[in-house]
Length: 132
Image (tube, rainbow, N blue to C red):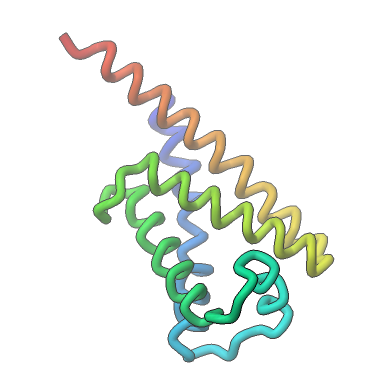
């Protein structure tokens, strides 16, 4: 039962790969940078290599989603933590930009990913206890 819940939450979290490709596209110049987002990135970073920030963010999201499915070098718990960090940054950005609909979506991602982390950790502990 626990593995089915983890599977469902992983499917929900996999939607974030779309934002990963969008951020990567902004970082390499395929999509124009949003000036509103630059204000928020300036608050987080305090300086101006925004394109590099978007490239790193996009790659981290893509690798994290792939790590959820065991297709990247990242373990599942590290992938979940990276996705939580990205969701917290998105939550902060949407609050600063006063976008209530997106704020709710980013906040729900933080809650779901935190729940996924706890479930995955408890399943790992349970499996370790069963081993002789």
